[in-house]
Image 1 (cartoon, rainbow, N blue to C red):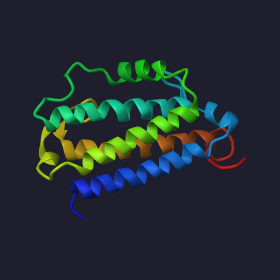
Image 2 (image 1 turned 180 degrees about the vertical axis):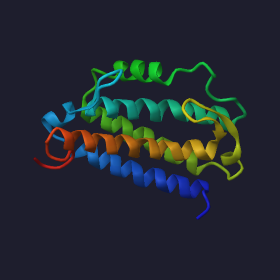
Image 3 (image 1 turned 135 degrees about the vertical axis):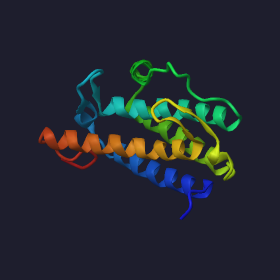
Length: 168
């Protein structure tokens, strides 16, 4: 199937529902499971905070590109941005973060649904992908979450704990 706004918004919806269900099933200590230890040490709750910050900020970048802007600056630091944004959300409960994620994803889906196929061909600089099309950037939104979901499941398996998102 060609990658159209309809296709992409459908994928965003499906993947967003999987992510939301995963986090909604977590209990107690599962939120503290360490996922990343290099650089900033992130636990599962921090990954959800990361999803919230990315969903909100990347939509602004996408709109910049759709309206003719160049996207992210060449000197943009993904690592610095991620650390700052996750830190800013440190006091928000997992429950509230999940609600913010769902709201931000719904906004992303609505925005993508309103694009034209020619919008998907517009190019700009993505903070991670470099210069590419808006269509490729949108695909990266759900792929990004899939990668982190895999890492969270892997971290749980390595620690010998119950699969995150499942009853112990």
